[in-house]
Length: 371
Ligand code: ATP
Ligand code: MG
Image (cartoon, rainbow, N blue to C red; front, top):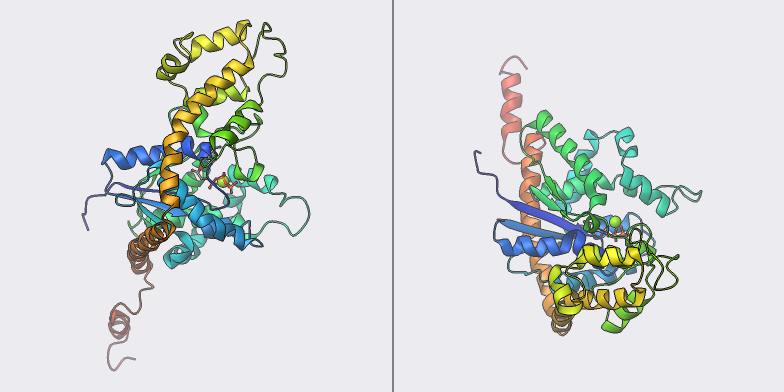
């Protein structure tokens, strides 16, 4: 039992659309770096199709179509199936069963307090009449706790919107372990050090970049599509003439430069400035036009996206290979999650058929002759 805690990573994405640069800086880029660091014993990425169905129950085709799409996004970014297990949530029955047991450890009042779920309820219009909030959606933080704990993950690299989920998961872990014994592992959230990357806004300068809001730059966007997005990007509406002083706060171009630009980019593409701080100063003073800023941003983004596009083209030529990666990964994950489920069932004393103990326990309580 005194087995050393392994370093295990679990993250995932909902297959509700192609992945965008918000996913990339919020989580995906980090996953690749952690994978390459060699510091982790096991790494899992879950394509959370069952969670996606909680608010897309009427659109299963959309979820189905995005399974291969999201897998292609992972592989294009450098996720290596030799080092990282990619798996599909709905094909792991242990997760559903764990969720069901964890539901007993969470109150409805606690679920109601989850700020991310509250925002999402508003975004999806579940609060505006209609049929109301689907129970599955309302309880998805519990199912997410099942995902994380089933893999015994101790490290979860995600965007800021996931903080309340991790908090809730940790509460479930503590409650479970104090009630049934130390089985579950306490996970730690790993956020990007760069605050802009934790919640990248959309190209409209609003909210977070989100598949559901259509304000995205997708990892699979061509150079032409990227050009269009950057050129129509929201800047400072009061910066009309080049000589006008401009505002960098809330200006999407500068937000993306905050997330992506390095001093090296300035040396390569815009040597007028040594770094972003100098460029921002000039914009604030006046005299720096939006088009120049946008052209620079486009080069910075293309430098990041070009290798992703190249890898994507290679994987797109081998879809049966991608399918096989998903099949094998899901099989590995099925074994892993099943092991945890067995431990949970034993701790909860519902492992009746593991052996004959149920009989001997009864006999002990009812010695012969005194039945
Ligand atoms: P949906 O609108 O269907 O919920 P989504 O765009 O929010 O989709 P998810 O699949 O819910 O994407 O999130 C996957 C991961 O990407 C999570 O770790 C989340 O924190 C991160 N993420 C999503 N959007 C952003 C963003 N704009 N900035 C930083 N991280 C993000
Ligand atoms: Mg989301």
